[in-house]
Image (cartoon, rainbow, N blue to C red; front, top):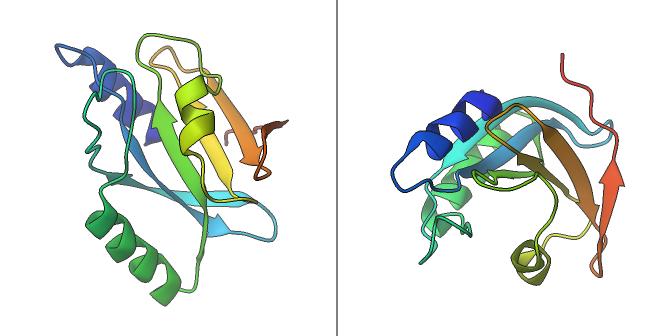
Length: 125
């Protein structure tokens, strides 16, 4: 789901970052669902901003289903899947996972500590 959404964004002309909410078991940091959210950034080719209304609605849906919001994902359609300076400036959820994907299938996961991103291991099943 996440990778197909990332490829979709990369295929746009011009390419655009896609984004969404990761849901699952927060204690185990297991993602069981990805919920796409519209990117409302002024420059979606190089940045993402989750649509606030959609995000709140998805967070409510996730919680009512008994799941946790585990983190967020976005794509880098024209660069490596590592946190950019913009990603660091805009990160605002300490303790949550930020998954970054590229259209060629590479994924990286990072926890935002409040000061920096700490890389995490990723297993895709």
